[in-house]
Length: 448
Ligand code: 2HG
Ligand code: ZN
Image (cartoon, rainbow, N blue to C red; front, top):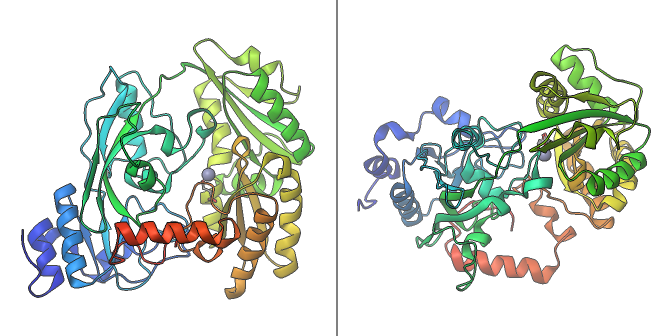
């Protein structure tokens, strides 16, 4: 294996080829700022490995040179967890795109960390199966990033978060040792579950190079509905009815009038409904047509979409929130989880909490209602905006929620971990970090 004798870039080039070591600031730039537009800094260089052995060699060289590494997938993160804080090497995994044949006995498939969610969805579809995960960034977000953040998305209610979809993985740990767990066994309790620990560890313990993904059997018949409601309490009540009386229920998402207005004008469309306090998008999918089952419990003014084109139009109103917000400015994003019993109180209080500190700011609230996952986006904050983040996250903690539901802690929320995790628990996390990444090579400043 090549040794680092002089310049790190030259040494890395002997591993990945000089075309994949980017030093030119213009070439580095797309890797240095994340999708939030808020986080990022200059890297020392960007290195694009092609496989697990190159990843291992890159990590060893960086460790030997005392240079920290920020692993990066599709760079769709929103919490600063996959972009440099200043001077690190960015290790891009997007070239790890090998994709195995679907194993029809287990309904599992092996895929490189750089395979995007959309490619996995297509590959699964060709075998008559489905990825069991979906979200708006599907074309760019990669499986390595999805695994390391334990991403959730639009159908987590039915199929769980990434954790539930990952049957195994390969990873290179910070100390250079390798974890290989690709057998995909449902029952395998031999020792500590290291793959489970790596899922959601945000690149702080190891670099995931390959995953074994559990596919699901798709439901061919699908119906969506846009439901206008008078209050968040009415939404919570309807959610209870949907959950218990609609077995084909797949997703229950929500947005509010401010979001609908912003998205409609961004897309240049007339909102199909207005005048409500809360809007839900409900989707059901089953082997039989679930329209009747769903319609039975929905209010009369719900708009039902039973063909693909109208369902897509409906979903665009929800999925385009992130883009419409980004077009309006750089938002502070707080991806939080709140117990459903406290959701009404949370949504009612957040605008006041923000307004008390930043009267001019604009607060957009939307998210995955069935999961209690609210995306708080605040536009128009100045440099002191972190006080707003803290106040919102404190409210979440007081209500028994979590400061990170699906985007991760990153650097955005690292200072606030103590709001929802006890000191002992954080110390246990630090001990794990020291054990698996003793030189602090991987993603410094993220999580703990
Ligand atoms: C979504 O649910 C994503 O659309 C992004 O998690 C949320 O932009 C956001 O805050
Ligand atoms: Zn989300």
